[in-house]
Each structure stands twice: as C-alpha cells, then as structure tokens.
Image (cartoon, rainbow, N blue to C red):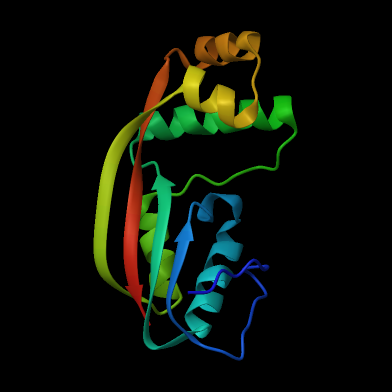
Amino acid sequence: MKYIHANVLAFLSNEKYDFAICRFLIHYLTDEEQVLFLKNAYNNLKKDGYILLINFVVDERENYNAKRTIFDFIQEKKEISKRTIPTSDDVKEKCKQAVFTIEREVKKKYSISINDFYKSRFNLTSDQVKELINIIKKMDHGEFQICLLLKK
C-alpha cells in the first residue's frame, strides 16, 4: 500500500497502480478539473485497475438549493473558495467521459446538521449558525454519499 500526496491534476507516475481510493475530493474541483482528475487517475492505473470514488452528492432540488446557500454563505463569511455541488448523474457522466466502466454503485442518504457539521467543519460562530439556519429555514439538510467502483 502506498499513500500518495500530490497534485491530483498533474500527478503521473512511472509506476502503475492496481487500485486507488479517492474520498471527498470532487466538490473541491471545477467541472473541467473533475474530468481532468478522473482521466489522470485512469492513466495512473494498470490495465483492469480499479478506483473507489467516494463523495457526497445532492440529487434533490430542495437539498441542492440548501447546500448551495450554505456554501455561498460560508464562502462569504470564511473566505473559502467556491465549491461545486455534484449530483450522482454529474459524477457518473464524468467517470464515463474519463472512459471508466462503473462496476458497482452504492448510494446512502443521510442528514447533515447545520449546528453540528457546518459549525465544526467551518468554525462558524453561534451567531453565524443562527443566521444560516434563518436563511435556509431548516436545521439540517439531506444529501447522499455515493461510492463508485470504477474499472479501467
């Protein structure tokens, strides 16, 4: 097993890999960078190699709108870079553009608490949490984690 800490958009190894894992990266990348990353991952795998791609996705319009509002709020308050909000269909389409075969898909729904997750993850103040809850009119929102086993 080898842990590689490198630029996922530029990494190219002389060594090819049997298996790779990517967790919660896609939303940090633009649409174009997502395809570039997946093509790069493809090129770093051996023939018949696999990558396990895990990321949150938001497939329901109401939850998508809540997540976009939350990300926009946090971007403004905490000066973080803009993040994409992938949907299952978007991620699967980009995998196909990178010429991967989707061998298996698992998707699980869960709920994210504004006061728990976002407060801790982005170091929001109690007042910012209250403001955000007031803006989106709910204490939490639903989203999915999608796990795709991709084959070269």
